[in-house]
Image (cartoon, rainbow, N blue to C red; front, side, top):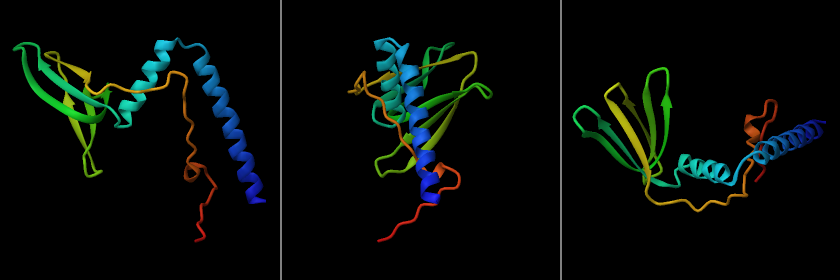
Length: 137
């Protein structure tokens, strides 16, 4: 019975996800699809980028970070949240406070090889309520 419920839940999720993906991609231009895929690759730590923060009053660079990182802006605190992947597989998180005298730029240094037609759906069964994963070795 549990296996049937799990199968039904996964099937429903697949249909919903495929429908959402098809609808969301149908109205997009080619450049929007490519831009989305490049951003996703960068956020998955697959693109080498450079973040430069500049003091606009003095024209001085106040911070420069180069590597594979994910970046987002927290509008509530006016901070950049930068999560970096290190060579040993560990991650660090940095916060860059922005004010009226600072600006920043993010450069893509390595480029991205993305497919403009491709998308990926990942199901994480451990996130589905009521599903318990067991392994029999």
